[in-house]
Image (cartoon, rainbow, N blue to C red; front, side, top):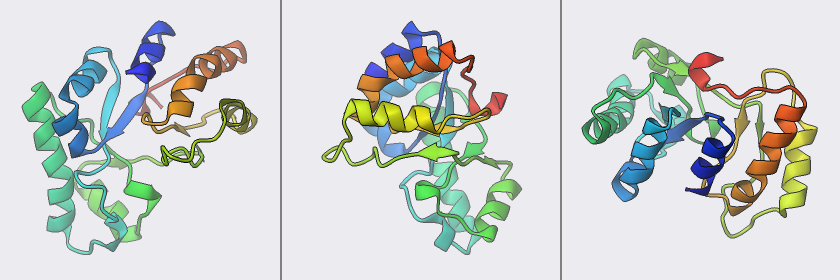
Amino acid sequence: EKILDTLKAHNAHGSFFILENLIVRNPELVLRMKDEGHLICNHTAKHRNMANITDIEVFRAELESLENSYKELTGADLAKIYRPPEGRFSKKNLEFAKSLGYKTVFWSFAYADWDNNNQMSPESALNKVMSRMHNGAVILLHPTSSTNAKILPELIKKLKAEGYTFKTADEL
């Protein structure tokens, strides 16, 4: 909620690569993401290591399960943009995604923010993110991170002051 509040306050949109459990546990957040103009993308249903999947039907089921859950909740289609869990992929994984009509998107910057019990200080996190910005940067920030929620208002202000704009994955 804090991430969405900040994005709304700063008129910035993001791309959220979600899992099926978010739809089940927090459907109101998913609806809010959609209603506030964020792009909702496929991060798979169960966060499996997709690089190990060699059968396209197993791969398809993982993506389509999330697609179906999202459609059932929102009445809309999930964006055909996919990010493999943990960034693990294989050539076959990329070919499967493409054959299913997906564009695969990775990040150009990420840091260890996913462990909610081991969060970096806000000052260190802000400095780390800012020191690695460049034109065309795709920043991966996990929305469950309390540090990310704390630094996001300042991060957006600093990036805008440097001339950066915020785009969703389909706009890049």
